[in-house]
Amino acid sequence: MPKKGGYRKKTRTHVEKEEDDEEYVPKTFILKRGKVGNHASHLVSDVRNCMYPNTAVNLKEKKNNNLKDFLSVAGIYGVTHMMIFTATDKSNYLRIVKNPIGPTITFKIKNYCLCKDIVAFNQQYKKKNKIFTEKFLTAPLLVMSGFSNLEEDDSFKLVTYMLQSLFPPLNVEKIKLDDCKRVVLFNLVRPTDGSVPYIEFRHYALHARQRDVNKGIKRLVNNSKLPNFSKMNDISDFIIGKRQGYVSSDSEAEDLPNSKVELAQDFQGKKKSSNVAIRLYELGPRMKLELLKIQEGF
Image 1: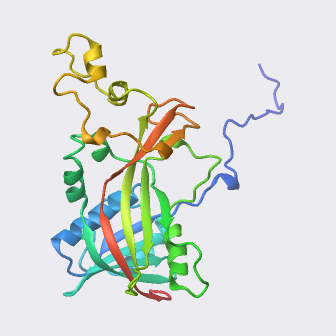
Image 2: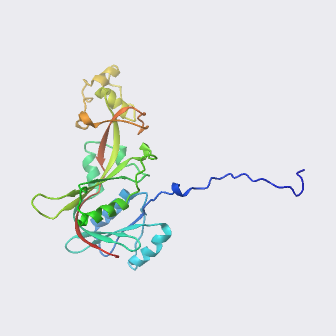
Image 3: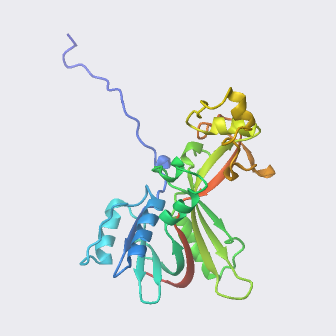
């Protein structure tokens, strides 16, 4: 029997979360307002899949909803940005809003291409590759090209900060290579003919391929399924690739000399310190954006 009235010592079984562990993770509402065509509606869905998991993929808009309704719940769910697609008789438009007080950047969508069209084109060369159907559970990495050395009064300076704030910051010390599965590219193009600058939007998946091995062995290592050896005398027929039907396809062309990377961690089934070639497969969507205006608030 414990001593009556004695003191009890409590041992903590949980670990308090330190403030430094709470990293900034931006979240977005991606929605359409007004009458938007069928193709533009598919574009909204594609952009949501691109920004997943830090966005509401199945967000439902109603005709009687206004921006104040979304803004009122944005603070509850920690939503930091809104990407709003609208359309007129002339063109489609994209507004990026920083909650809760702005600023707002408006782009004209000069042209775009949907995910289904890009994947259908790519699968002609990469039949039934799981990389086009995989559900990505980590946020994409951000790559910005052409935004360096901007003047302080350049309007694209603010655009740079806005686009960077859409994606989680990259912590090089804590990042895991297995979480690096996608890349979003914003490329600023300034035509030499003096026409209006524009931004190219692209979305890619990362894939690591084995390097410094024979083509036949590379096909054997990179494939997740065992090839069909029923029509071959032994495995050397597959390695050498002399039999009809086993010659390397155009998609298995030699990697560039400077594309070799030594892995610092295990990545996509490839062991640490192995030499791999990183390839990009475009997932879509594509957009060509022309900056129209920057305004305070909404």
